[in-house]
Length: 429
Image (cartoon, rainbow, N blue to C red; front, side, top):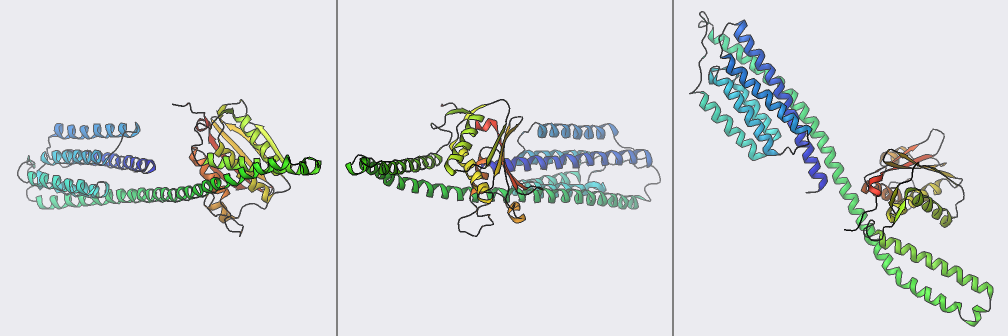
């Protein structure tokens, strides 16, 4: 089971326990009102002390359940089954003290069965069916009969029918409230599962891209090394060494080959662990100053305005994957905004913020709605739309977010937010 699925299951367990807690509060209030009404309005004597003690035990159970949820304790299927069995025990005790199976509120056992069928695994649901059936059977033989005042004997059947009506109304109201809430939870859980599935598909896509890039980088390594050797030999030949113009051409070619080799090395490094042995200590300002300067030099793009409002510098690791993500972000902005762009580095508490603002036409609404998905681009060329997809996944892997918006003044703003803790240099084990 993936970590996302485990987290989803833990959240679902806590939500289900909260549902039980809320229903138990209603049950306690309903039982208290019924006991007081029966005792003081109808004058039917009940064993008040034991029945109120059962209600107090249910209140303590609710307090313990809430404490467990707030502490983040694991709420498993067995935990929920135990809570429902305690509810069955509490209801059985109240019925034992008030007429057993002759009490019209014995139908409340069905509410426990319905709750179990929705909240529990299959075997646990059947276990609850067995428990309630056994409790009902026992209450047909063992219970404390209700001592009715004089005159109630003639209207006993009508009183029983009224009790059944109250029980039916109570069960109907509780079921509607419960099922409505559960449906909301199920829709939220379906949305979470869909998000997990989409993320898995995207990560599989990234793995394939990484494998292709790594394979291409390995294949390019050999011809680039051969070109480097050949150019070195050419530079020392008499025909070229005696011509300054040819020497400059060879030097330019050697520089470009070295640049290609550096790119290939970066791809190979990125296909592995970006926080491994290749990571070097740096700071936020040093890293982003260098990345922006390298991008300007590589693209010969002089219309970039860089503002550093980060504040106090922080030591971090020099992350090759993050650098490539920033390159992709700047490439996208430069493509739609050749007249210029603004890059702002800032900080919000322990969060790094990098905003890139261009002067282009902005994002179409459909592209904004699907930000971060592969091949989500307004361009028709094959393979477009991977830049922001890769940037978004880098941000997500580092625990951050990628967002985009069209500005009212024109152009668009793409923002990366990263927790500084994710950029810390990890000490070797």
